Amino acid sequence: MIFNIQRFSTHDGEGIRTLIFYKGCPLHCQWCSNPEGISYGYSILYNQNLCKDFGECMATEKEAIARTNKHGIRIDRKKVTHPEKLIDVCPAKALTVSGSKLGVNDLLHEVEKDTPFYSHGGGVTLSGGEPLSQGEELTSLLRELKHKNISVNIETSLHVNWSQVERCIDLTDTFLVDMKHTDKDKFTRFTRGDAALVMNNLVKLTESAARIIIRIPVIPGFNHSEKEMKQIIDFIHSLNRIHTIHFLPYHTFGVEKYKMLGMKYIFGPEKPVRDDELTTYIHYAQSKGFQTKIGG
Image (cartoon, rainbow, N blue to C red; front, side):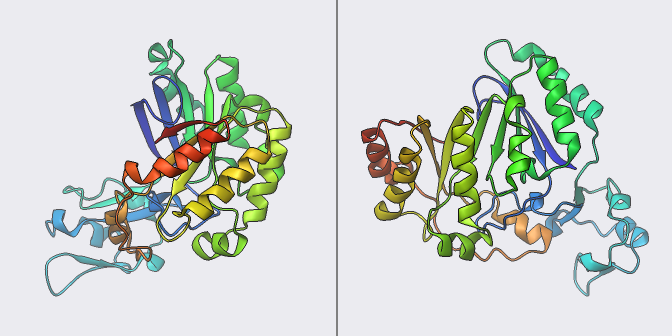
C-alpha cells in the first residue's frame, strides 16, 4: 500500500527522482515525520479547520463518525469498518484517507511518466514507512525497474529480517540507511525497536559490497550529543566500506499530522536542530575520511 508519490524530488538520491512512499513500518520512532506511514493499513486524517459539517462522512460510517456538540466531528477509528469508502467522500477535504492499493503495473505507469527527467542520474527512490517490510510485490517492482534500466534507491531503517534485505541487494543501486543509535536501550525506548538487528544487518549489507549511504537523524534528547554521535560514526567507520554520511537535522514539519490522525505526539516540545549545531559532528566524520552532507 502506498501513501504518497512525490515527483521531481532532488533529495533522497542523485538527480531528479520519483519518491514512492510505502505504508507500514516496524518501528515507532517518537519523532516520525510521516506518522501516516506507520500503519500498514488505511489511515484517516481529519482537519477540523476545513470541516463544513456537510455530513457525507457520517452517512458513510454511521457507527464510527458523529457530530460533536460544537463545530466538527468525532471519529472512533476502531469502529471504522470500511475506510476505503471514505476516500474522496468529503467535499471540503477535511477528512482524507491515506493509502492507495497500487499494484506493480500501476506504479510502473506512474514512474514512466517521469522517465524523461532521469537522463542526468535520476531515478526512483522507495521510502516509507519501511519499503523492505513489504511483500513480493516490492521485488517484482524492483525487477521491472531494473529491466527498464531505471536507477533505484531504497531508504531503509534495516529493521527487518535479513532475508528481506538480501532479496533486494542485486536489484538496488543505493541503500540510504538510517542509522539512529548504537545504544540498544535508548534505541528501544525511543523507537520500540532492536538496535542489534539494525547493526547486524548493516554489517551484512556492507559485506555484500552494496552501495550504502548512511543517514543519521540528529534528534534532541536521543542522539544529539558529541559522545553519542561519535559512537555512531565510529561504528560506521569500523565497517570500512562506507564512505558517505548525511546528517538529517530534526524538524517539526510532521507534528500537525498527529493531531489529524488522532495520535499523540509524545516527543515534543523539542526545537528543530539548526545546521550550525552539526558542525562538530561533521568535522569528526570528515576526520574519519567520510564525505558529509546536511540533508538527504
